[in-house]
Image (cartoon, rainbow, N blue to C red; front, side):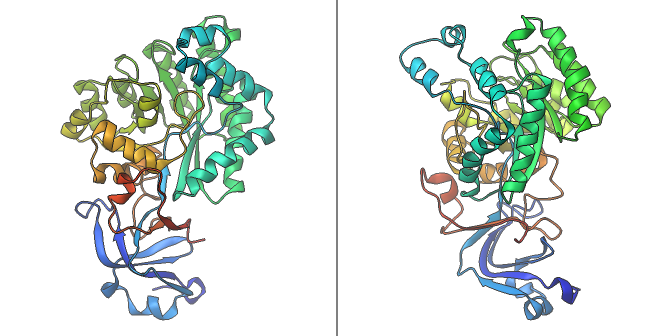
Length: 408
């Protein structure tokens, strides 16, 4: 029974795509209603089953006029906070310059690190807000933001503080991830082991002291860090009581997916070169595969992630923008879904689950958001569409009618 002091808000005459795992497909309900109290869903189901006292005591009633309601969208892998941009090197690549030539000329991640270190915390926040606003405008209600463009203690802390501030600037659910093991800074002079030691022994304790991270990530790749080096980072994260995630198997198969699974990672991300054994390990561990078609498209990758292996093994698949200045300057989760469908041959159901239910699990928020079920946060996206497939099918078209975050 709802107490009078917490009178619910009610949305009725709606079509629901609940994404609830106990319902088939998208969990569709043709004539549905949602009631929320104190920012949480207390009813989501057929309007005919709505308790009479909910309607009678509702503080507000919204007639959705047959519109579709989905859970608010979740972008579970971004590098949203950074300094500068990489548009010039994009031009150089189009003109035929190689990545190595650009890097030798001071481009690549080195240029982003330089710009990020030079930016104040206020400047980092100001630069990230327009990108965040684009995502919010498409119905995104929860986002993850990684560090990894500071690569020294002071700059990583500044970046994470800026990321945390976004939640006070906009109505958004936010998770921050410490990605100190993203790349090797120039001052490390090629000594990856010494830099990893700094990540584990200096940076991570400083991040933990300010409670700035919800998880720890790393980049396991030949151009980044070896499996053994990533294990050191994961062990330090475990000692700090933080869950882990991993950029894995993007450019080669170093068995990063299996490594992530061995540490019970929330997610392994990219995964173009993951093999069947890696997929099986992820399934056994409950590690979500986060697929990033924006990066695949932007760097002209040709090897598609092993979608069929993930299906065979029962691996949950999330989809995210990977918004970053170098390989995925993408701030549209709707376009990302279209890319996942066209480039990776994911189904409409897989794409929508990938930006709601499975994306929530990839952030450790499966009990909090990602579906329209009683007890979850009231994070809603209301759409001017005739069928959910339109959210995946259309390109450059935003049919969002209204975004609700925690019933605010």
